Amino acid sequence: LSNTWLLEQRHGWQGICIEPNPRMFPRLQANRRCTTASLCIGARSGETVRFVLAEEYGGRVDDMAADMHGDKRAAYAADPANVVSFE
Image (cartoon, rainbow, N blue to C red; front, side):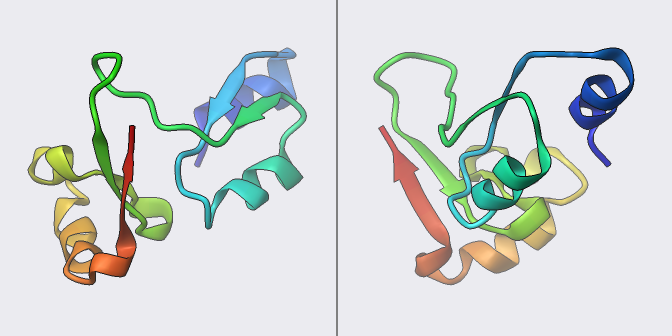
């Protein structure tokens, strides 16, 4: 489910889709017409963001306990190869 995909396909939305997971970014590019960027956006400039590469459950390490997919993200984060840092 993607709100921006629906907006793009049915309402002509022309925004920017950000995908920090380098494993998922090629799929985003292949399936979207809007501008895409492989970036991670944090709360403050210059802050390092640790991101869990967990397929569709990926997200910031700091947010793992804040949503219903935190347990799935934590399982991926147990393997250090699944955690990357963006500066």
